[in-house]
Length: 258
Length: 151
Image 1: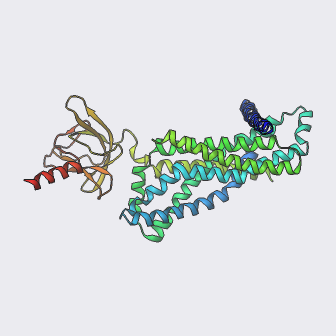
Image 2 (image 1 turned 30 degrees about the vertical axis):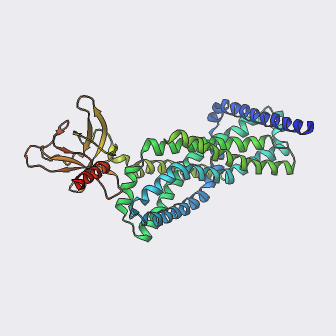
């Protein structure tokens, strides 16, 4: 009984310590922002790794998700004779929810896992400590550019995702089924507003980018420096980042859309 | 990887992302059509606007000629004042035109429909459409129907 209590307490304390460590880490990374601005090359390299190389999976998933949304929306709306509203449905669900969330989940899987693995392996092979020996701050040199690259890349990827998804919905409903393209766009334009829908979507995706970059980098930076430790950190990074994105999405949706 | 290629790739990526944001703003939310200042504003007072919302279309003969810009309650007359912005090129709408609130289809959203009048004077910026017809409220219609059948 006492043993159980002790274990519970130790777990709780360990969880709290991890949370505090992560918050302190992000505070130090944010303080390194001017250093990143002075060396844009590091940021560009990371933008290439997490942004450009995630484009293919984002484009393909967005197209298929948009097509499925269009198809399902059409079947349901056809019962009510309101198939012209399919554009509105596809656009609103993509811009408000699916765009930011699915992009962040894909980002955590595609780019976040490689961030954790890379930083964890750097730690395991003692590259980080040798940097410190050379008076190079690994948080500035390694973590900060990756963090800001994630923060910039996710909103851009989300915007691309939403546009390609709407295009996919357009292709299926207008191109294949034969919904009229005029009401498809005009109903969408009547329903979607720039501040409530699009701006909130961008804010959401920036928050998700911050969260995904932060969690995966933290897991890598604090990984146990063995091969099994790095692999466990990578799994945890992706799982925790995905769960955090989904949880935050609920909170943000409750706050943003009344 | 060649540094130049990396930079070109990132440039393309950022440009594609910004272009996508622009498409979202212009094509998806229809921002291009409601830029402030283009067109002229007219107002109309309604007994009841039903579920008319801002940004709802204003149409004449089924053609969209503008949008509803703002809806507010006139504190003096307790009627709803609807501010509409009409596109610049439709500048010859007769002054005695009437405005009514219709519903697009059975379940569609509500819009303001204008019926042309006969005056040669046309509506100008700041003018008020005097003759209006309120939105049809389903409950009121049913109530009237029920009292009529009981008589």
